[in-house]
Length: 163
Picture 1 (cartoon, rainbow, N blue to C red):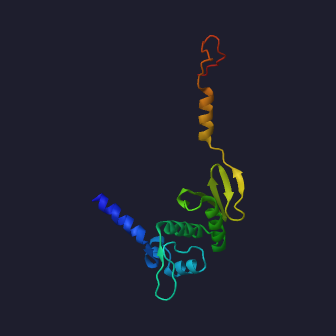
Picture 2 (cartoon, rainbow, N blue to C red):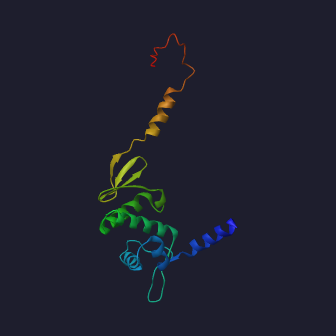
Picture 3 (tube, rainbow, N blue to C red):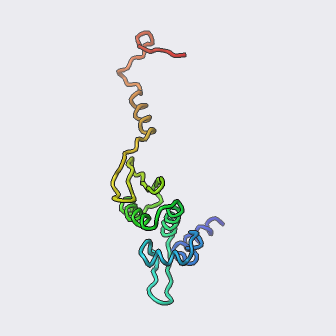
């Protein structure tokens, strides 16, 4: 039964999602979705409208981006800022948007990418470096690991016991 569900989900993803279904899933109006497509905020990747009667088809990744766009708008980020954010985000993470870690602080949107904080609002340039304490701990553990040169004679160590 699970195998059938997986096949159905794969087929649905291959066929994509209609504009109406996409708008419902993302939690926006069809009118918003249409506006975002016409103004190139996000065009459907499977099939774009090409005249009267044609239908847009959105991929799973399109839905993911649309959901992220909605969350940014809900957080108070203006639509023009969201456009810049996504231009810079796509430049830094490419198609793998699900791997992105985004920090929203007021009107500021920052990407945490490989130990750097990158300002997505303006230039897409690195603004700060992030120090991973897990990395520092691993480095310390490696530094503390005994080597063959180490001798651990308790009487010779300058160890101060607390407690």
